Image 1: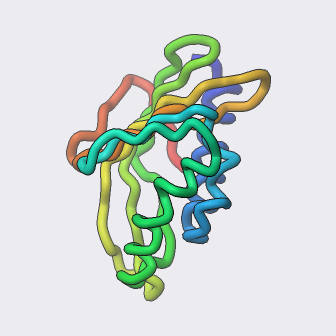
Image 2: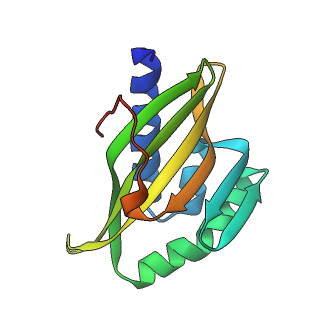
Length: 141
């Protein structure tokens, strides 16, 4: 695995989690490839544009806000470079309340695409936290 790409993807995901933690759907748009795909227990959503990303993330962000959400962090990150332009990343999103208590955990797997010098999220898969896919290499945020 290319260590520069691994570091870049780790940074992109850390920046994405900081943006997500604002609960402003527009803040996460720069982290997504156009088009992108979101897969969750609720179904599959295609997000061909940034506006579609905002539309897809607005309801869950509103629900998190109503539950006292404060921030998220990505833990147990595992990375696997699939090609020069594709990286697979799997980990656990830990969500905390404003008071710092843990709200919930969710497994999350991403496929990131490198276009030019930038890595962006092309596919997001939400799944059970105990189903994090492991690779021989790993990184921590």
